Image 1 (cartoon, rainbow, N blue to C red):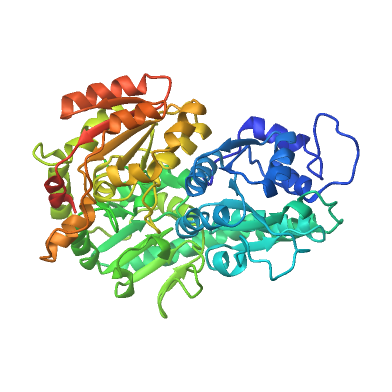
Image 2 (cartoon, rainbow, N blue to C red):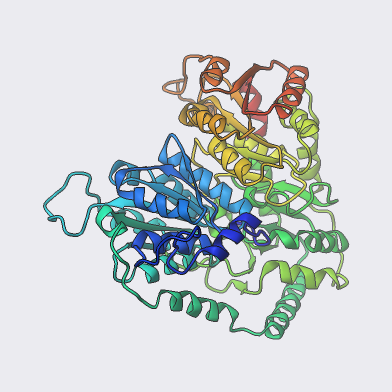
Length: 570
């Protein structure tokens, strides 16, 4: 969910037309609103224009109510993929993502996308079927304790009933749209979905929440940002080897001021994978990408060499390693508590709660308190040399970057290629690099690309996946074909779980349980209605991508890769 993003104009029009009960805009009879109507009206007002999922009988009234308020339903092939699509769609529209499933197994398959949204701070509303409350508790068929399963990975989890439905829906929507963003789950039975909703003060819940958010006058927020900027400048003045780490909580709209500040003060910086694009990689002292993005030893040395780390929008959910537990760290921005509770920082650490983008904007207009040596030049030059080395697998992102327009969106699955593209893909803008980072879930890249393309059909969208991740989500090519989502899927094939295979090798263990038989990716793509291309080497990849980006439907480009090529970039 982008800070500066807004729901599409059509969604806004639908939301404005939806009445308080979520009734039919086409002039349905004035009847009591059902629970499904209340839910549909609320999500329409929130700007949700598409829901994704795999339906069951319990949620058919919800789907019909959504249809009547103009919110389209996208049928997917798996519930987990539907949730990933919804998250990416929401991130690029500015409205929450929405996923709908049946009860039992459908609900169980939501755990992956909800946990992913929780650990990547993405706004996702899930609606699943449930057994009617009138049924005996001893009836166990397809019964799950949804609160116990999903409570730990959601900000709100509730069963919708006629009494209190409006309040529960609005509470869930408020939760997912309040920083730090996250997930909410609402369950609904077939009986309750069609029952008349009892009037409640549901809207008062949102009004109260908004009142809290809007209670602080703008002048007070500006004064706090000035004060926090003073405190941060004073800390930097005392530091000999500072390093700025930009995280997912940094608002994309603040990227220009951030770049101005870093350049003017000549401060070294790194980003987390979710923050790629906020700092331009052409910035003179940009060092690289930390945590889960390759070059682990090199980036570890960079972090260890800093005597002060400034975490701009840095969030604990992003951190794969534990360097923050021993570093001198200033947290800038209110990232909220880590999932599961607790404090994001250690006792004694400084936490500046003004929005990180506001603090950066203040400092961009000031002179630096001192000058610093270029302490991390060696690491920066090493990374740049690897990026241009023709003998390394870095040729793949290099070729792809030449073909994909600057405004294009890249989604990346999990595996060795996540490290490769996390470190070596040059991302010129915020919200153009999508990856499952906090959970690091395989099977993310393809569904996320489809969601992104449906949200922004005007942008080229490319997914990079391994053959393992492709096997987990290839069925969604049918969704892409049916929805005319012209995504390009680059499948890096090595018939192996290469990241695990190399870890096995590094530990001196025999190669065991990490290899697949080779499959014909091109024929699989064609079987799902996509175009298939096999590209061997840089020239064929370049030509294949050019052809794929000009196609009117989904295209899969298979690129064979030698596992050994990843060693230098991990």
